[in-house]
Image (cartoon, rainbow, N blue to C red; front, side, top):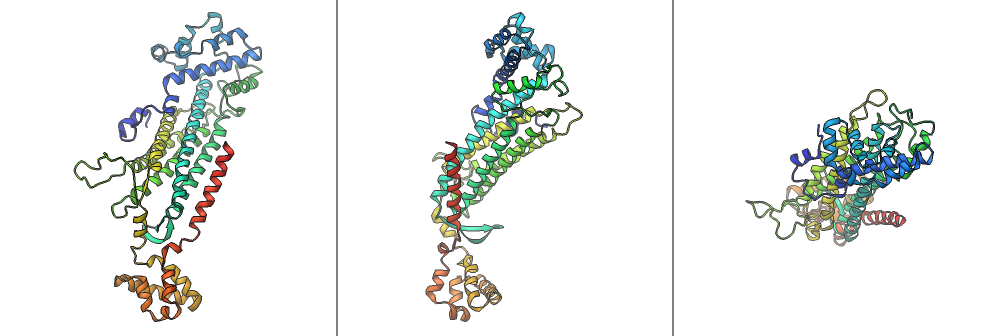
Length: 457
């Protein structure tokens, strides 16, 4: 089991090349300790509003809720004695608090509620950045799609030329998928926001008094969270699992883009190229190589993140009311990895080189056979569908075996030449005039997404 992000760094050093990110900072020791104090202050202030503890005690906690009073090195030292993370934090913080006020710190609460709420805040804050990052990716994809609405290329299925499309049609699918991923995160966030928790040792509010439900609600509002769910989810952890699985889905989206760009950059295709700068070295011994870096990293993230999500998902299977192995480390690792993955995608998509000429050139690799469907449809109106199908299979086979163009073979065929003139045939076999509604599709996607973006402003 991968328990530390450090282990990921050791296993996959090529991926983790960034300075400390926003999400990594959210899960830092100092920020975790600050959030811990914020949660305890919110609890105390809620209790003071309801007359459960004195107002002056809550004010004391608020005034001393500063990381300088809860340094990580001191917490580590204390924890080596008490062997309890929350108690260690309380003991260190109390050294700076008024003795009388200390009596009301962590009043009636239990450890798991406090630390679960800290984790909820960390994930909620991470979602801020992850959604913001995906919106930035969306900006790059919008630009890419608009620029290549009419960039003609071969549409491929099972690795074979199928029918003509445009590159904008292709990136339009990336654009729409990215938008769905933004909406997935927003949906998960609505559940995370309701996951702040204060329910006591077995989840029935025991120890928190008759005003426990009201205390919980006021506490979460002070923390910027929504009205909390009334069920005790501590042993269930399905919202965390949904968050992790959503990140796994997003990683597969980027993995697919990475895989596609790796293939399109192949020497034999050369249709796109990652911009690595003029001084980048592709290979130490083969200077002709232009190895894709970003696409490969996206593929690796699409393998790592789902594995981490499996561990978080497994954490849904627990015993009784509140037993279970918490997957805090995996949630930290998956959040950091998700942000780093998106950070790798941003420059890749923003600076992607698109070789329009090569895309157009590759459209002709099959000597016009990519338009055989169109010719079949045209003939079907004149000689019947089944007859046209049988005829075009023979024509295509003859063209392939003799390395001839579809145009040449069609001119020689008595049936085709009888029903279609040379000028008509040239028009029919022009791939730029047979892309279906590829452009319109992409334009509709662009319009829909720009409307959603405008509504957020």
